[in-house]
Length: 107
Length: 124
Image 1: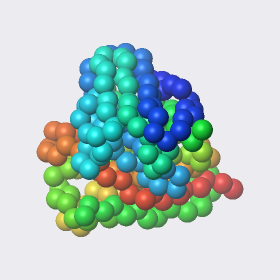
Image 2: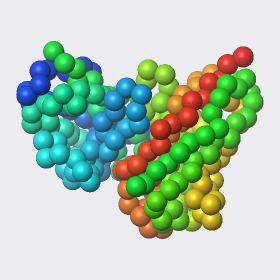
Image 3: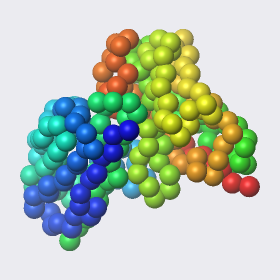
């Protein structure tokens, strides 16, 4: 199965700062990568699909990039509601797999 | 507003069975593949299974294949997960989730709507 490795595990930043999250795949997944946000006690929320397409209602401060095996989620200027855990997910091959998550916490 | 509502979780002994349900509202249910994804306490997300929009095809994670069965009733807008031979490591919140892409051939997809989850605890 395709393993997704997210880094860093924890990112400590202040509101207004830029967040850069990484997701690396164990083999090429083309652009079939999505990003989700999860807050405590809530279900995941789709942010980005197919590397760079924002899901409905997602603010423009969230953007995605990459291809092949290396992908990035960027939050251009952190808002208080953005502090959460972020997961990447690939849909290139079965089984669908998720990364281990990056927690973005308030510094 | 799309809504997914899971039910059926609870405490169950190892080796026993449990059936989860997910009721879907406000979208054309029979046009979308549906998934189950689980999350062990304090852990990350693990994809469990998918079923095609017409129910004719399904895929499973290796960890549950042969023990879990995904099914759906399009006439009722309902998704199910029959879990048998449960193990302690199956303890998790189980989410049902909707395929972002519609159509009969789109199983592999981002997941755009998720239920609130139902907790399954496997313990003696």
